[in-house]
Image (tube, rainbow, N blue to C red; front, side):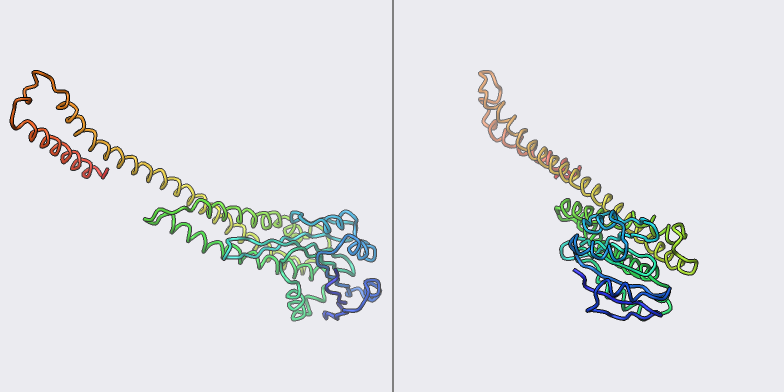
Amino acid sequence: MIVHTALCRDGRLMETPDADVGGLRAGVRDPGDFAWIGLKDPSEAELMGVAEVFGLHPLAVEDAVVAHQRPKLDRYDDGLFLVLKTLSYADEEDAVDTGEVSVFFGPGYLVTVRHGNGSFLGTVRERLESQPELLARGPVAAAYAIADLVVDEYEEVPAGLTQDVDEVEASVFSDERTKDSARIYRLKRELAEARRAIIPLREPIRRLSAGDIGMVDDELQPYFRDILDHLTLAADETDNLEMLLTSAFEAYVAQISLQQNNDMRRISAGAALIVVPTLIAGIYGMNFRFMPELDWQLGYPFALGLMAASVGLLAYLFRRSGWL
């Protein structure tokens, strides 16, 4: 459904809540004017109606309706189609929530299609209204503001994940036996989700910052370069977190192996403490006819003493070697 319509003129946003799309398009008269249409989870028919008015390419419209696209930048005739993934981190659930924003922009128009929770684009309008000189540069400047807000939220995700990774590391290296494998896997999966949003977006933003597609003037290119810097920082942080989680998992596996070795040594030591006196008792229980100790009055106490001495000696040796 259409959730927002506005006419941008002379660096000001004029809200037109009751205006039809055709009438809004007709209101674009001067070179600096552009119509801004915002849609949330639209049906194909709704988006096609907007597409007919602004001449949006059918392939881009299909991608915007279906959603679940990877971040990209496509040019169709005199318009651009930019796909952004939105991210937010739910710390209580160790989960990264994703959404999607498709941005159509060209001479005289900017159309945004939002899927999922994602960022609320009202914040973008507030930023632009406080910077009329930027808004006056047209729909490319508005597209920059949308991308800038989305990337700003990217930086919050690694910050939230860093705290959880620190907790995992502390748990792995604690003296207590913990079960961290499930949480490590969950965090690695969420990091992968964040990477799918951050890494592919670098190339589209690079193209916009370098002016490769011809619609971004020299004065706006530094703004996109600033977004690229933030993207690179977010990508580096997610890579570092991925490495830390991999190291934590390897350390967890090593800890499990070490604990199992310690358990086996204790089990072996305990078995030895039982096997040696059993051996002695077995020998004395054979009742050979010519066994010297059969007629010896101290034979039974001697056997018990030998068992106790052997157990004591083994226990001393095991403790000294760290097996007990």
